[in-house]
Length: 101
Image 1: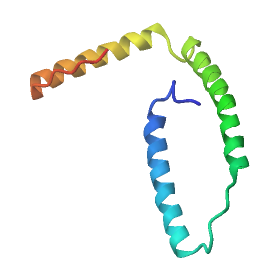
Image 2: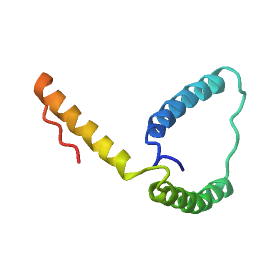
Image 3: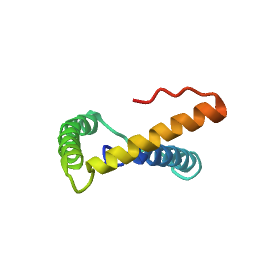
């Protein structure tokens, strides 16, 4: 929900999901006797919740990107300057031409 304003959350989420996957796999193989039985109602309920998730994501994204206290034009200018400096540094030191928008 907050990924528009904090893109680092994608990396944190990926690490979290990978960790949960391995922990659950270990627990299922070593400790649990039988896994939970999920039926079609659980899947239908989850799919219905995606509509609400999209709505909340859109609202929070709109708020974060339109709020002048969160992201100001000076911030955008500073970020653009840092990107240009990074592109120049990488081109001069590593011979990399980075195409960033």
